Length: 446
Ligand code: SF4
Picture 1 (cartoon, rainbow, N blue to C red):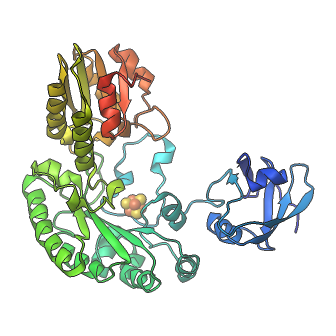
Picture 2: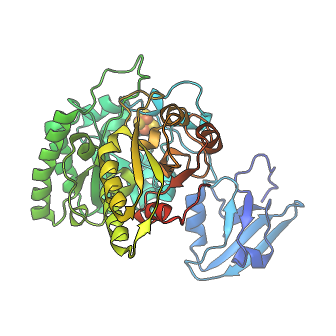
């Protein structure tokens, strides 16, 4: 095996877990994996597949360029404890579509460069749960998913009508989705599906046909989430599309109540679930906890409100004794969840004597007023809306910030927000316990 130039290789080890097999062997940060059982490692899927053997010969180029060979005997499911500098061990594949509803295409200019990257990589679907369209994959790559049993795989279907899918994704390869899903079904892979619903495009009869088609692939296709299109004010030069208003959302919910009954009868599951947004737009009562069937599409925004509501009720039930809190708290939310959060706030106020909670809906001026979800509220809009509000503490949901940093989408930091508002700001997870802990005084501002 030839020596690798560290600048060219993708298999650089970033970290070795303490006490792991790699640690015991003395493998270190900066070492490079050259091969496993004489096979080069192309990407993280290859790596995971190759190490799932009980006997391994690991060829490593050490930091001093010496090449070492390690013989390892282990249980087949035992990890080596190696973390790579590039978690995919390869470049992430970008998407080749130009979907009529693409949020990335509707971003304002001058945002963080990473936000403009459109990934569509089956490896990220498997590793991180990203949804993929399967439009940029060769037959060999589909074979590899089946051979390596990469499952569950999350697929953005949108429609099973080939012509319509080509039009919606603006990609001539987009029409082959159903035969690929059938292949996954035959191989017994687990598939979670997602549909972005666009009024007068893939709703109505098209949606019905798509859901019936997908239901034929049950139980491989485990569930389908249906989420409404989101429209920002940055749509110049993009196709004209509508968004969901009260009437259109009510129609969607009416349709789901009938189709879920049918699926429940035929398959024993409701199978397809409308996202929370449809309920928030219409103000219709959320389905019961049981009707979410274990929340299979929680990450897709199906059932977040219900599970939060139930968790809050449970927490409040468990509070014994008299809490007295002579404080004013302000909860900042996107406009969509305003009514919902108001109800939650009233229930909390009843339990904590002397507590006053303001719920403030923050209009999204950054992306445009049609963007109403809390997760896309920016720091600047928060400052503008909250700076005149009299309060002792502000609570914002964690979803408003980057997953591992306290920074909003417009690059305003949590520190900036606190400095501007001059009151403590508490960041809350979407968890009933964490939320109630704030009022119990068990969570401080960060
Ligand atoms: S698949 Fe469609 S929606 Fe997703 S990033 Fe690509 S163009 Fe945008």
